[in-house]
Length: 91
Image (tube, rainbow, N blue to C red):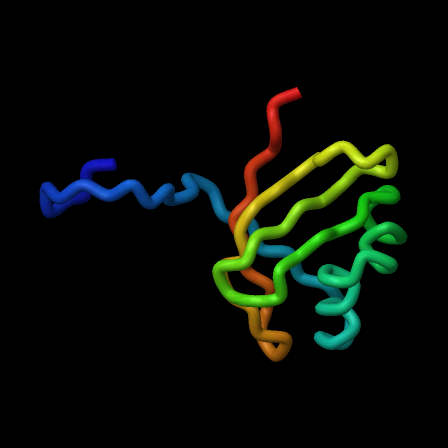
């Protein structure tokens, strides 16, 4: 990808960003997004596999085990919002 200064970068920059606001205690939301037993409740049976660190990867699996979404953890800090990049897989 060509940068404004003329240099090139292989870094993928998303064209669209989404922010979701949830009326709940931050710790509860964090656990709901990062613990498989909770993602199954809130994401239609999908379970998360996540490397708990900045730069780690994550996979959201459908109930039959197929990969639905995979991506990268941009920032891992339970005291802050969960930031991630994701890509939907071709089916």
